[in-house]
Length: 350
Ligand code: PLP
Ligand code: COI
Image (cartoon, rainbow, N blue to C red):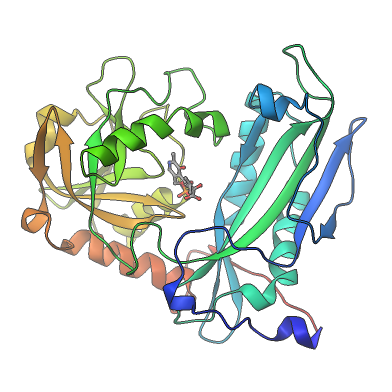
């Protein structure tokens, strides 16, 4: 155990957003209508039947959250019960048995606790990314739900998603490809949404952007979201606007930032359709937010072959995104009092 309490000697500040093997993962299985208690495993591989519905028909969903080390050494999760709820929603949509909140939180906590040595120290700029996943396994060929499921949680120490430094200005390119249909699966964190987006990301990157920006698939007029993040727009009159689309993932980060903007920065928050081409000239600042992305200021967006620049010609971070970033991150890292009750300590034990 002493061994497990010693931090790995990684160059934490140099980490990118990549998978890194850690010692333990949590796994529970659903069979004959019941979830097993779950256990910690050391193998990073999953052996499944070649007919597994997760492999053929994408009967799977996943989550993403982070653990961070506070200045006093406590290990903090950020609103994990919202991830449990979102996975519950996705499971219901895909005819997967729900993971009860108790099992979800216990799986996350056990995976974090067992991998204490891999949790980046406070001040390193890195964090422990946690990836809960729920997959349909077992033998199947016809299009029907799996009879068995695995709930697995693995973790990996990670650095920033978009760059080597904490707060990078990124760019987006509007995609011709649709991410999600109005009554499709866009609001759920299911792998199929991301497979369909790989080509859009590649095309966006071929134009020199970091990510694709999706418009609503019914009219191609309104902003939905980016490939791995929700969108925030700062506008005149101290307003912070976010799309109200039913096809976007309900981002935990975005919901938190909207509360911070309203309660701490006194901004007026609006949750409404944003008509991109009509309103883009009124955008003062744009941000892309998510667990992996945190809050990335968007310096420019490519629309119909033309780049639109925001704050300072897209060269630096604007004041709204900077303040939102600082306030969110200081809360998540336990650097200031959490009046919201959003942080959740993982007690390490002996
Ligand atoms: N939108 C998409 C498509 C995502 O993959 C993510 C990442 O989880 C988000 C938004 C941000 O959600 P959250 O803040 O809950 O991580
Ligand atoms: C996250 O932010 O947690 C995600 O799942 C996004 C993913 C594409 C890395």
